[in-house]
Length: 234
Image (cartoon, rainbow, N blue to C red; front, side, top):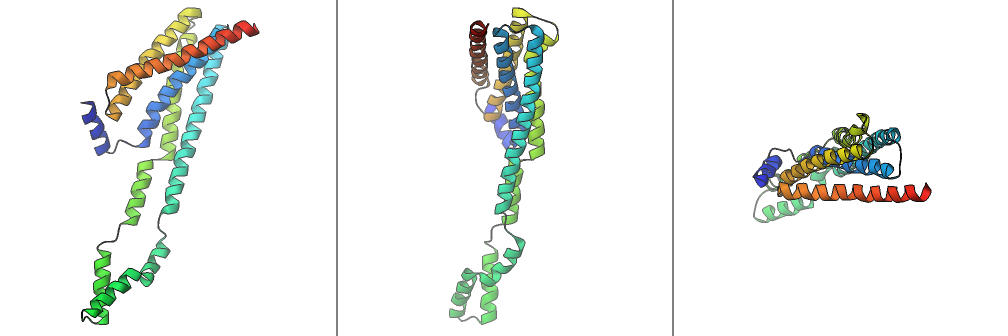
């Protein structure tokens, strides 16, 4: 079922960069901001300071993701655009087409007149010409819109990064806030992992558990480092 859905995604043209940027933007927001929140929590920061740190991480990360995605996609579009054939150059090709001249000579050797040979050669080569303009346009379409990718990254990173901040915004403190943040982020990681599995045609459950283990593992390491730093510096 997952492979069928992935194939449908590609066939319907939904395999563009925007969905990828959205899914991975949300996942990055979940993991990075949970790690940030737990890191300063392990260091002994007060709940109000943790909330401020989480909000700052949300905004900084979302802006960074959006800007990076915009630059990445824009650069790819400009690179593809530089390879697109120039119309002025294409107009000169018939006058420099060695293949056409050679083919015309073959037809003349078979007894055709000069005009007939040139017309026949031009017709044969024209039927085999690649549609450069169409292929260039398809390449740009495959890359996607730089603004769309940037907006998706910003919005979904911010959405993911807001999840670990939510318990502190609701007034929870201490282990209750940290535990609630981990539970909420864990559920969200299971969801994004399953979505990645569906989009890639892989097993959703395996992708979900992999996402959960990696995300909470990174947060646990950051908490331990924060706790160690808090003990050392405190």
